[in-house]
Amino acid sequence: MREISFGREGLADYATLAANSRGRLVGEAGSPTRTPFQRDRDRIIHSTAFRRLKHKTQVFVYHEGDHYRTRLTHSIEVAQIARALARALRVDEDLAEALALAHDFGHTPFGHAGEHTLDGLMADHGGFDHNAQALRVVTRLESRYAQFDGLNLTWETLEGLVKHNGPLIDASGAGLDGPVPAPIAEFNAQWDLELAAHSGIEAQCAAIADDIAYDGHDLDDGLRAGLFPLDALDGLPLAGDALTAIRETYPDLDADRTAHEVVRRQITAMVEDVIANAVDGLRRLAPQSDAQVRACGHPIVTFSPAMAARERAIKDFLYENMYRAPSVMRRRERAQQIVRDLFGAYFSGDGEMPDDWGERWSAARANEAARARLVADFLAGMTDNFAIAEHRRLFDATPDLG
Picture (spheres, rainbow, N blue to C red):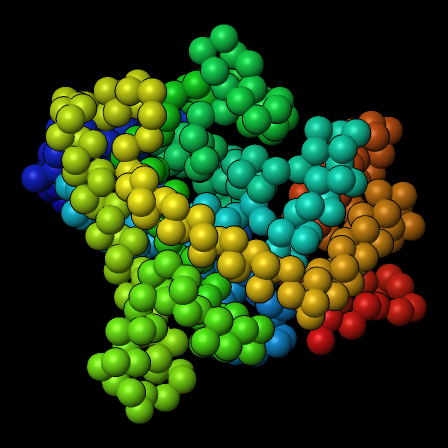
């Protein structure tokens, strides 16, 4: 088969070019039909970790309703927005999509409640961080390929996953937000991900797409769950303005359609703001390569200052009215108890771990830190329903998350 040429193909000078990829940790022959970033995207979609996102909580537990977001539907929405941003900025859409689809691979069951609990349980053993765990998933824990552990993704995809929220260290090597998580530091010693630099434009597109997506869909899910009424959006930036305009134009529109109109208009406004702000920043910086983007010292794909303030107000509203709602907090406390119980049972050996995990536990038994990390890996990979089933298997009573 004749190989397809993967060149610039209309991409901007500052795009991360697949033809110039720094490659994979384990060398592989190239594909005649797909770029390295397309192959990364495809490996992510076909991974076990991706399928598990279907039954991992975004905010509501898996059995509460079919129409609420899960980590899987959230990731698909992030990918759609990331591709739209990448297309508008003339950078590699496949890389942006790959990063969006994999960005939540490291999340535990039960959303941030599970992560917070597991981090506390791992405090004496390097802590737990979902970005670091995503790196472990794609470099070690996925076990599908004959030649290597993990997915053997390109340097650019690994860099974008690790620096999802920006650089991790300053020029001196000091951590910007505490010590670099151990899994990241260990891998970085093996393959330098340039932790002091910003990531490429594509990773920045995926990162801000994450904010845009959950700002919109958490409003939608909160309204659907009855945690707050439509009238609560009055005076809220973007959503409140959209609600006023919709009611003026469609005074008899039902609540469900009104909510959808509010959310889609908010997302559109945010996307258009990011594109305009990024285009302006790129015009001023005039980078001639992706290396100049990484070295410029600040992110380029960001909200304008005015939109950033509006977005912060939306997050504050969601924090107060959704994430801290009494019903959500009750489920959070019960979910945390499930995670604590499971960790204790597995770590002590009182709870038998299934399949080859039990063999790994036996091998790590003498090393407390290694045993704790193994248990964290096992727990973090669980779906909500599997965690509940395991708790019912090991304990006489399981907290009700309904």
